[in-house]
Length: 266
Image (cartoon, rainbow, N blue to C red; front, side):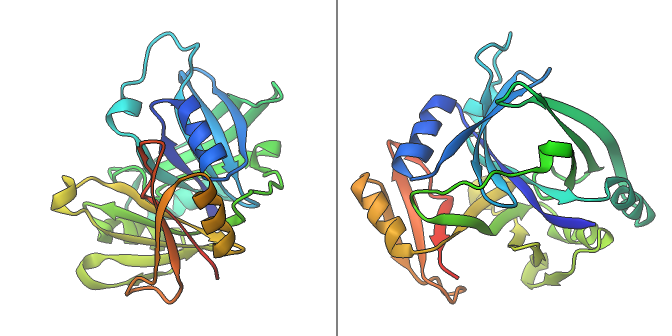
């Protein structure tokens, strides 16, 4: 059964610089995730009680560089957590989807101990839209209780774009996730405490697919505003037409575009 959004992946051409942006400028407590065995990557984490943002970059000890971090920076994808991976993959197959997995992955934690994940995904749908499933083994699924100076405490909303939202919605239904279909095939689904909206990829963005917005719950919007102002981060505050709550939208930080990030209180 799908239980929550496991994590959101953010590509970082310069992992050290992004650690400074997220830590010092944006006010998150950034923790070391570790190295991914055999993949040539490493990560940093912005942790919440049930999920995390993964700042993913090249392992400086890797033998060859990963060009994707420079060519496509920013938010990329999100993965869903399940407590019964094999069963969910069976449901997807029964609904006519081709699947891959379960596959066992291992990374080295910051304490030097291995973290093991079992991963499966739908084949033929674009990656990045929650059609990759994760079932952690043992401590790999545990999140630390982290206090963020900006008062953010949870992942509230994700927005993403797809070349075929209706196919993604069908995969969600096969996994037992209710979806509310809207105009043009776009849909909204609630997974755990996170609302996920997926719409058609826009031609003006080159039909880029994947995550387009990360909206975080904060205990106090004024705390976020005060922290960002003190650290010279540009932002706007307003109430979008499709939202009932006021939203603080980050714009730019240290020359990096972080306009995909926003905060709200609920």
